[in-house]
Image (cartoon, rainbow, N blue to C red; front, side, top):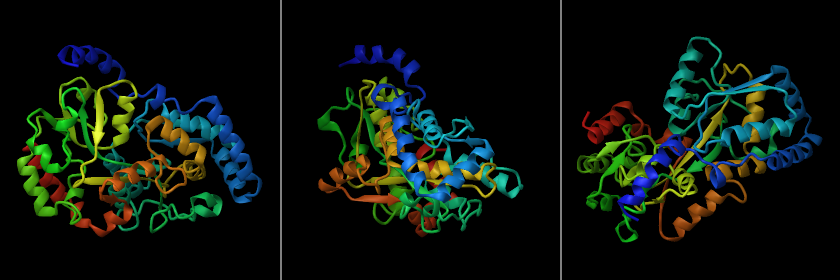
Length: 375
């Protein structure tokens, strides 16, 4: 597959993949059948759970659920909300505002909370850093919740202060164009990336490089030294893998998740992701309820429902990731496969963010961005 094939990909990808589109295997997780199964499962949960039934009634009374969220599969979020409403027989208006920038969402939530205004998102979706930032030791904008009181299936899935539930896990890595980088040239370590002569892109916000400053990886001085040597040929967002598939760049390092590349690959794009043994990361996504949520019952009902088996199945079918702590998790099997090959992961979770404040210090992150971008 040479230049001619890459040229054939460009127009199609520009239309079909520019926003991380996923159909077929990677975006059709909300069929009528899945919604029906969700409703059947919900009946069983509601039958012996008066607290859950009361929350459903309260959510219907609130009448709405607003979400400033962004996922990678084209229709995953709508499929999830449709199945959620069907599961509990909800007659509420769900407003979806696509937004994947978690630090921006966290900053907005903090501003709204400090100003005494209702939160623009009823449920907050964040990575460990942004969730910690709006938690009790940060802006203190999230409710402390006894999640298992109404949703016993969430037992053991909350963070250490019960302000957020673990939802899904992503595995960042080296995402590359398989027609430009053959198997024998695919890097195995972060140092191998420096040896590549083909154009490698990065994110402009140094995604995950601060985590590689952990003692488990390069260390703070080590990551500084690494970024003095790593000179990207361009910058793009984690969802812009169409620019890798088209051949504009040969790879993205660090990419935000194996699952995002899998979404593109499901469309036939020449994209794959490898996890580098000395720079392996698992990054958890959390859901919390703002103290100033306008529809707190609908939001909590939504957050806990997302950890049901049927919701996790819809999520994996659409976005190719799920919660590694749950029985039957495909992400857990994927991680186990890497570990069997000797890969040791840095687990970026809420507790990691709390224990390593120096890696999330604004000055340190700003320094890494400057080293990466020269700005």
